[in-house]
Length: 276
Image (cartoon, rainbow, N blue to C red; front, side, top):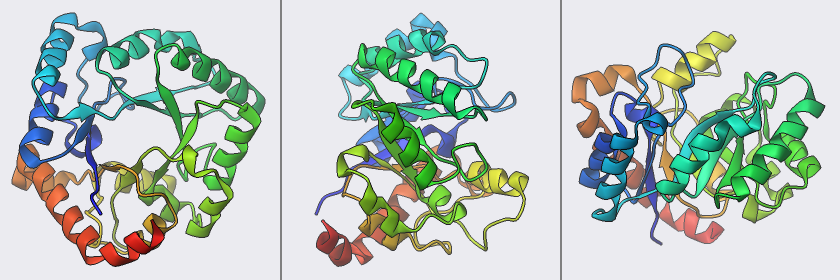
């Protein structure tokens, strides 16, 4: 069984999108996943959406590359956010031929969040983008059940769910729960691992998510059970680890993550084939 891999930007966030493409290509990834919208105010950010020269450079490089764009991120629909404010992001994603846009709903008002999500999905449809709703244990959509409920209530046939192995573990979502969702909801997986028990505090959970993940098989998450419960779909390697990345350098670290992930999947291949 062959697998497809994407290099998620958070893994090597210091790289500009053009360098992210080059790193993905050199390491042997099939896709890459640029972050078009910053998540925090202090993270490295490359304003591709408003830099037409850089966008032209990247689209030109993509035409010459076998590597494609899997998804863009992050569309965070906060209480004050207008869904139409993401139109420039959609236009950029369309220029890059992206397939998915990662979406989160940090809003305590579920009805307002639902309405904005529906509007967002309708706008994304015009750009052939599929919104992927992501649950995170510290957010208002904390687990699979909450994400499933939101997708079902939305009635949006172009929406799906992004499963991140770390967030499955941190939210105590059981892999067998995925059987309650249509397989078509799952377009790709954020694949990683993490060491130790689930941190008690929100701050510690966020630190692990952004700074201290490890490749599959090098931590304590039962990654294989999660993968067996899902269709065999592209694996986006979101494995930020500031300490190891700084020692190796971004390009070498991207290659290391892919190498270790391939080794893990090969060692579990028969079980994944049986699931497929």
